[in-house]
Length: 103
Image (cartoon, one colour):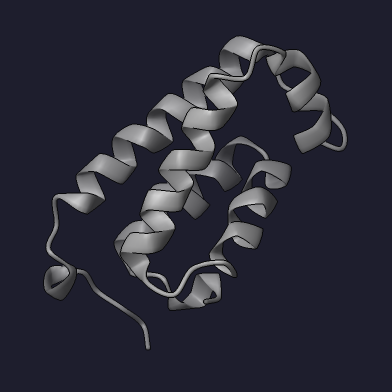
């Protein structure tokens, strides 16, 4: 699925939030969307990706792999990932039939 197929709530929770932080982070989630078939699958895979990043023993090297330039500080990166995780939980509490879609 493309990011345009996500619910407005999911798009705002992940794509918009990451874009406010850094476009390179948004790119990671955009690429992930192509591996998903549903809004909930994208939420689940995003959560898994974030948790894998946070558990990485060499987060500094990971940052260099994710961000092409203007590498964020580790604490800033952790903070935004935590915010996105919180956003994901809020969206998951909304039944799919109550989420809004553009298409």
